[in-house]
Length: 272
Length: 262
Image: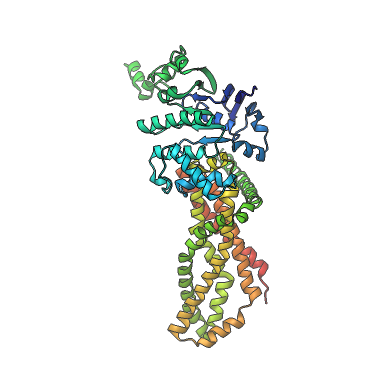
């Protein structure tokens, strides 16, 4: 792995019991880039993020972050590595018993010996960066969905991570919040010089902001390239996904038996 | 065929139960292992002491008072048959300090604080707060579980003591103030009959053991709860049922060890 690549995934296979989830995945994430992993729900996108974060171990292959094979690290080394990572969860995962301020300050208090005055200034800067300066005394229950996602983003970047992972950051957001969060992801990536991985199935918003896209279907990569490559892709599944077509390789109907048989229509017709 | 199926079902439940006991024991040992933070940053434990201990005070004090009042009335009726009404203080105090205080306070603690702990941790898991903590390189056992464990262990004997004290007050109100038992003999017989080591200390030991059992069950059920509404609700129910049974079973075992037969 060259020093230009922050994350390298090589031949990663993973299965829950006997059900394969990832099948020989190869991906590379160069430093400073914003890369999306797209695909249908349940195709293995979040499982991939969990491998990068060291929550899951591959049954075959490896994930390297900053030159270290993640699943070979002991707990102390893994926690040390995770301090250099940030992860934004699907619905923010804010600590509901803490104020916005305490949520953003959480990692600073846990991992540094900074005095409270400096922590205060840093928290305000992070909140200002996501446009939520002034909300520091609110509780998570008092925030809208979009605001909660932005507070979670401020918490994610609290220690200026080198790698930021986003798990469905656009899920359930109104169009304005969606644009705001999308632009923040891009701007923060560039301002911090970080590498970002966005797991999403929101095509339109993510194609506007990302540098490169991996398309995953049924645990394998079926397409990759820039936003323009993906838009022009001849792969039938990618085309159906990007343009939101109702029928295609992913059929509208669940693959079940013949419905007319279930209603008894065919047998009555045969009797007649 | 039906017999085979039911035998297989019983076997699966037994094996599942043994696995859970194993996971629970490992969880308990990990909680002890990662307890350092609970003492280094004691304010985390103090905060949980407020939620588990202070917030349980009202139900404990009110229940203690009611139990003491009932003990006073029932005890007076029984003792009067033998002309020993003056021993009412002894009866009330020994019943509470040895048995009713630790057991009833633990049962109430399991229903009030134990179920709350399970629901809170279960919901933290369901809303990915536990996963977020792990991804922030913060060990949830050390940060979330251990402070709650020590808060439960510390608050349980204190709550049991307050339950007993309120119970004695209830017995005094009924026996001395309302019925007219001699106040001097009520207190003096109580003082001479209640032994610090064999009565009070054994009661404290019981309440500490109950505190450990209830808190470990509550935290484990929350941490192990499936991250769904149904999963959290089931875990909360299991906490109350298992804690209650564990308290009564441990009470039998501890009483057998403490029984002197004199």
